[in-house]
Amino acid sequence: MEQIADLSKLKLQPLRIPAGWSVDYNASFWEIDPNPSLIPEDERWWVFNEDMLQMRHAAHDYMLDLGWYPEGDFETGAYRVVLLEHDFLGKEVVCFTTQNRMELVDKIESLLLQVSDAELVKNLT
Image (cartoon, rainbow, N blue to C red; front, side, top):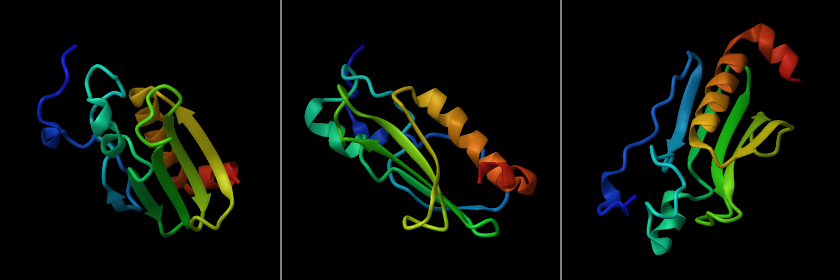
């Protein structure tokens, strides 16, 4: 695989977002795998960073936060998505890590749907 010549042309990762969720920011959850051959080392920190996506479900008072930890590190790093009650000071309900983008998409979509369904929210806590 050849490195991507123009990283500014990256597209955001599509997600199926059920009703009730709002996106606080989607700064850098890109539609690209964490593959060292695709992204020059000096550019990895902004493509795979700690502040990728943040979403809230106001009615059920949950926050979902996504980042890559440690930033730009493809050797030891991974996506980390956390589901919290309220905000960053709230109880961590789910923490999931993976280097696989599609596995991550499945997990995020599943969490969003579970929280949107009031019956499943009860099972999360």
